[in-house]
Image (cartoon, rainbow, N blue to C red):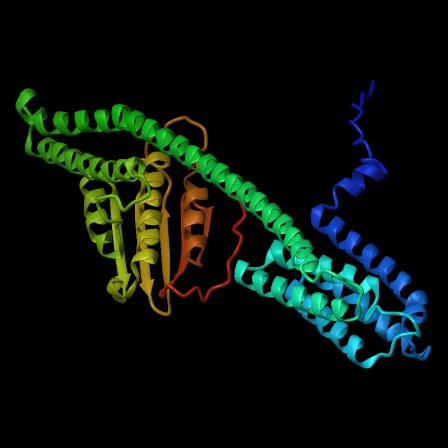
Length: 414
């Protein structure tokens, strides 16, 4: 025997630069900030003795106050500015300069202040930006002009104003880009929503044209058959009435489904979902349709909440339909016990007539999904005598007290 194998494509490694590109803008901003702070600290510490008379154990601390506040640029720029400006004022007042040196604090400290003012303009409200600009201009203008370093005190407000202007301009550009991206996303969501609504409308039209149309014909035929066909006895007349009632009920549910499909997300006006209180009508309708059905209910169905009752109704409905489809003529027994939980058992015997040929459907899977959706469990399996049993256990309250159980797939048709 010859064996063949298909080689799977090997994903190409993105490489070093590709991995760096995937890190994102925020990572690069943080990395760049750290590099700038390291560079500022590396310059401030060795050159501090050139401008100030500082004991060597204190020098790293003063250099840190000059450089480290820049680390707060992205996290909390106003706090970083406050630390930097406050330490600059403290250094100017408390740390003596070297003989012949007029700078009250290091140039590194001024550079750090400019970085922080730019960050405040980029990320903070305009009112706070104006306060930071005015305070920094006053600090640099008063401290440096008093020492004769900055002859023109207006140079600092103008220079800082240019920095603030660039920050505000960049902030406006970023906001405009973000708003454009948001509007684009909203447009795409709206386009997708319209596509979904159009598809729902198309499905509703097809469902109306195919299913509802034919169900309406069934109702009309069943109601008019006793008048169109000669020799219809009372039993046949009752059978036609039962067929018409069942078809009308199905047609009403289809109309409710069409209302949901045609809605645009608002509440659709459609018939309410069946509850446990509607089981009696379901049993009577099945009996009128010719099903050899017996049922018993222990407890009060009124205590079953609507959500659980709807699941219970659909499970019973599907079980009766499966029994009539796959075991025609078989006796069906339905037992419901509303004690601490809702216990349901639907058992049918071996059919007396030939079952229609066909492939297995999704009835059992749908019943299992309904049971699990309300916190219950369901099993479906053949019985030793050739029949079939559906057993379900559902909670009596909307709070799910039962553990979700995964029910194995059963190889039985539905």
